[in-house]
Image (cartoon, rainbow, N blue to C red; front, top):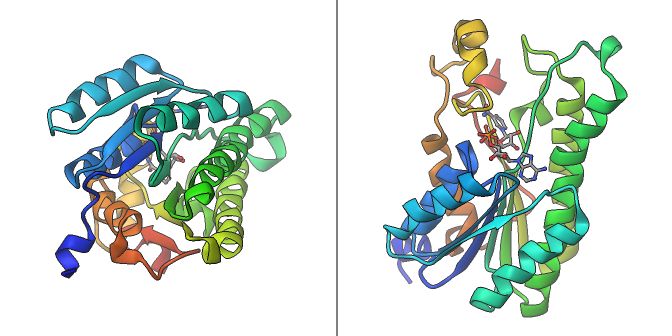
Length: 255
Ligand SMILES: NC(=O)c1ccc[n+]([C@@H]2O[C@H](COP(=O)([O-])OP(=O)(O)OC[C@H]3O[C@@H](n4cnc5c(N)ncnc54)[C@H](O)[C@@H]3O)[C@@H](O)[C@H]2O)c1
């Protein structure tokens, strides 16, 4: 098989949590363009349905699923719906996430629980359910959306809880990768730098200049900047890659 062909996902079935917005929606579009049927799972069902309708124009099948990734029973139902529809799960991208800001000495317990609950526990529940479905067939690729904040203390925004959750995502993903490698399942992360989405739009006028001046490439990222990374990690193009954290940050973490 030629290398171009190894990037194809034709006939495969994919699931994207947080698929209703921002990075998740854009990565779902990349998977659809590569030929996969794509399930969009989000706690905002309307947004997931809108993205699903868009992707159908690319000639693939879609599903829109309402899920709160902090709830184990809902996460299991999400995976079961994909299996019921398409019989298998080949690719899972876990992008559902939130970010809040607070000084470490003022961080409220509720805030910690919310962010760590969605950004870390949500990844665990999703990866576990997706992994079980993939292990049953002996193949699959899971891509968890971490952040460069899992490797560095990002600035000027203060969010120790977010940084801790994202560092946890990277190490949790490496652990699953090691456990499941011999059973045909690959688990990798993508760590975006500052990327313009509904999550960060509010911050661009306040912090955008500082973000850009701290980025060697001199600009913030777009969700499209991440599409090549997800196709690589989802497909046979990365068949010998697992436990990797692919940082896509315009060089931000170099300085
Ligand atoms: N935008 C950035 O600069 C940036 C940088 C690094 C990492 N990330 C990560 O990328 C991921 C996607 O972020 P984004 O920028 O696209 O944000 P976004 O707000 O545009 O999208 C996040 C999606 O997750 C969904 N979601 C939130 N909580 C959920 C829950 N409990 N259950 C199910 N769905 C839930 C939201 O409804 C939304 O559709 C997040 O994990 C985020 O931490 C973003």
